[in-house]
Length: 439
Ligand code: PLP
Image (cartoon, rainbow, N blue to C red; front, side, top):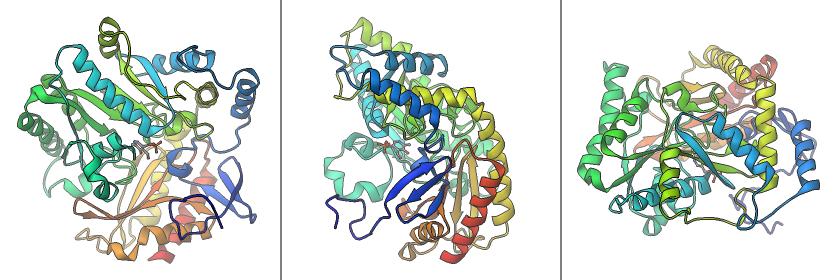
């Protein structure tokens, strides 16, 4: 009997009792390779001694001080580090407690920016159908996952959605990547023109789509075209790197590989690696200047912004990643994971697509490879894969359901940056067995 309202009321969960390195343990003594870091969170694995030591030091010194009275060394140091490593034009950071809060704050920053610069008519948000930006009301309104939105629609602000850049499902036969990038990006310009450019506030997109689609990178040039369109119409570009950012794709920020910089960027999960709840918005000098020379404040704030414990843990996580050269390991192990997934699944009758970047990979399951016909959602294949994987000591993040006509089951892999070849091989072997058992 539990008094927690869990995600699934009728499922009995094992009790997590410990974690070391790439493994989690339950109270019955079972060990699991954490191949998804929960939901792409635990980038350093579990129980990292250097992070724990930093957390102890911070707890001994200062656990909490309200930001209306004080700043803290931990928050200042983390902000300095993030801005030094940020894409061009980013000058400040705003710390919150997670991804949804970061998206909410970014939306409000975008809105306040236009009020500050005398364009208060800009309020429209454009985002994409196959996307997830969080579960709070503003973030939920922005995301395009209908299953999550349906019953809450009366509470959601009006947002506008265009097709995502998702080659496996949307690129037409015979269409080159270049043509597809142009067509997919044109959908944004068409929507801006339809709404009236002077009313559009921001375009929000995940650089690499995570939870709703399973690690879908954009085709080359799509985001550069998006950046151009936003600039031409004075629309802010908000990149949501809550899941795909902070090294997961092999560069600190996924947008580095696209050669563009956003006006606002949200980060979370891998920022603190699960050691503490933390997220952040990175904002451009232009936006900061508008606030600084205008009202002199950002009209927002929660009790736990800039939490010293969370900032100290995140700082330690980021220092370890840099000190140990873990982004190079993400690239090397990502290449190995891609190769091994290919060897295991390229000829598999029910694997339609293997995609992703770095240690952020998606495997899409289909009933028929030639037609890309998905499995009947009633089979709940994704849930069965999760169960079979757990039975084999493997944690993966499978998703399924119906999203704007695309019915699909996929498995998301986001193993820790400390993985070695043996760990990757074990992940692929167990996943292959789990998928075969679930089919
Ligand atoms: N944005 C993206 C891209 C996400 O993947 C998520 C969570 O999965 C969120 C926002 C919301 O983050 P949180 O669950 O920390 O609120």
